[in-house]
Length: 140
Image 1 (tube, helix red, strand yellow):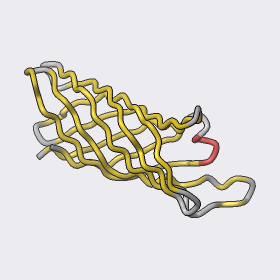
Image 2 (tube, rainbow, N blue to C red):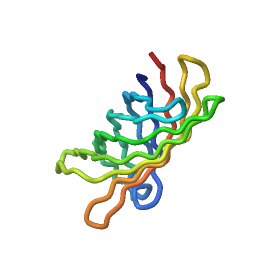
Image 3 (tube, one colour):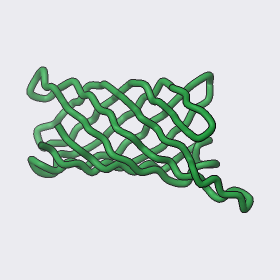
């Protein structure tokens, strides 16, 4: 199990409105072979809006993703991890949910420290919100 700090850098359509995101997450991996395991994660990310045309919306929106996937490990601690799940999106204007999928590439730097890079997309009715990000976590 790990507890991490996440950053999100919006790409695509999301980058037109949002400048940055930050949050926390919890992840656990249940191994079923020495180099493979089921992963489960959840957390929350706050996305901050850009200053568009001199108008700044101060609230942005909040995302609560819950994902499951499979982690594939190498002997030196490097892993890849495709995930799928559901994200609850909340702003001062609305609350909605969206299907999400992600891909993580990371490394267990030590027995208690994990560093990963990710790409995540939330999709609903043909509209996508995507970001790249970094997760720094403490492994219990």
